[in-house]
Image (cartoon, rainbow, N blue to C red; front, side, top):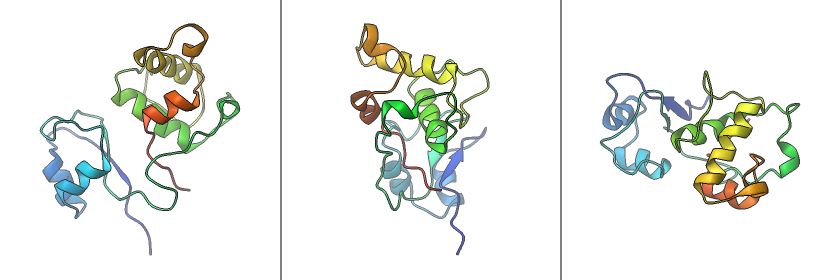
Length: 142
């Protein structure tokens, strides 16, 4: 059985109610799966909304370790992290995040670290366990 898409990108004219109906889930489920949505009446064009329940490994990606974040690494975890950074207002992406670790990811993550109050070397753009866990990157499945 093929699984439905787990995420939906908000388009012009969308509401959470319409998105829920389109994916045959309830508004309450959408809100439960998207704790970053503080007001269900406010969503933004291009925002990534979880439309299927997280399964298997839990709701959020575990911290993969600082060595994971290198330019040679390509992973859907990096893309999911990037979309969370966009949602948090920390993005410096020109065209949005993708799955390869880049300088834009590092700079965006440094913005997140500074938003959390980290300074100096603790805000160098390399994810650490504390800042990663606070970002709540949605679980990604292969």
